[in-house]
Amino acid sequence: MSIHNMSSDAIVSCLKDIGCQQKDIDCFLDSYQKKDINKQILILKRMRCHLLEITHQYQKKVDCLDYILCQIKNNKCKK
Image 1 (tube, rainbow, N blue to C red):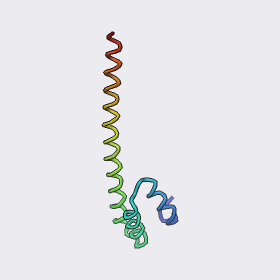
Image 2 (tube, helix red, strand yellow):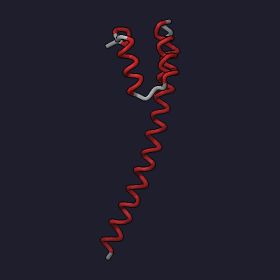
Image 3 (cartoon, helix red, strand yellow):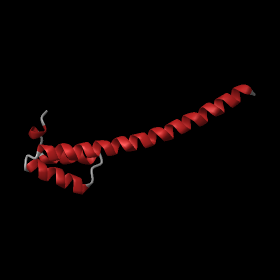
Image 4 (tube, rainbow, N blue to C red):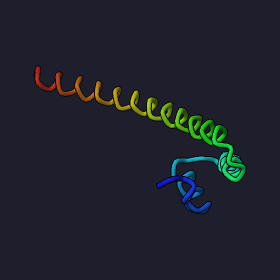
């Protein structure tokens, strides 16, 4: 489905689902109405980078948990 076949409500819903703030949604809708594809891409790439950064932060936390679990299991097996 092309984004140009989506309603504004559907676009807003998707942008909210990925965590866009209202100012970014408004900016995207403005660029959408003006058919400024480069601006749309810029906004979405910026959000993608933000989401990846958050993902990496959570991955570090998961890695720390895995390390602690591994240490606990290794210690348990030695006793």
